[in-house]
Length: 240
Ligand code: NDP
Image 1 (cartoon, rainbow, N blue to C red):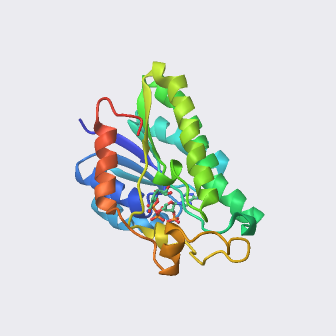
Image 2: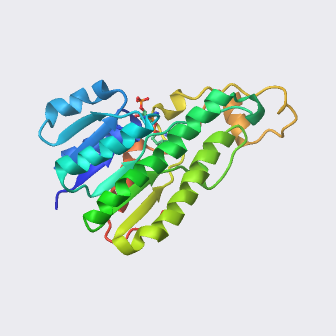
């Protein structure tokens, strides 16, 4: 049966590939993005089933309004995909307040507000599924990625608790934990090695990678998205 999906961060990477794959199989997608123009190619091909909506997760009030409006307009949404996010590299002491607030506001608070806004609607329609795109960095930690890990460990803890609160309403969650995957994610990272306070840190995997000027990409984005869609389609998905 055809499904309706609501996706954040659909302008690029995993979110855009997922949007394209879902449209190709005949599903309906509410694709939210900051750079809505990046979805024009998909809109040209699927204007009947693709609904592009401007949404910046830093605008908390707008998250709820967008979700409310989407449920009003489409009646039922089967899967909410909380995907938007980004990484930040640097020694913890060297990150400034604005960097800290912005990353947590996007990856953690933005995801929490999206989920909170969706729950009453999913409850009212008798259930539904939420996919939280976390990261392998939601389970493990590398030096230099402290804030990113804080956001992903944080959202995983939040989801684990909320999943138990709402299971009785037929709402379930999937936490996707990709490893390094070929998208704009790595390109947007400034991988300058942190100086000063970390000079004595034993050189580990991450610093080797940075010294080589590379972010080791292990995952293929299309395969990663296929795995997430398979999990979201499954009748009894595991939490991760
Ligand atoms: P991309 O950079 O290609 O895509 C990230 C998306 O998030 C973009 O659409 C971007 O929008 C959007 N975004 C960022 N900030 C905001 C914001 N304030 N409001 C709305 N949208 C925003 O990277 P990926 O596709 O790889 O990232 C998707 C998810 O996957 C993220 O949560 C990331 O943490 C996770 N992940 C990625 C891994 C990787 O190696 N690629 C590994 C593990 C997890 P815009 O285009 O406007 O900037």
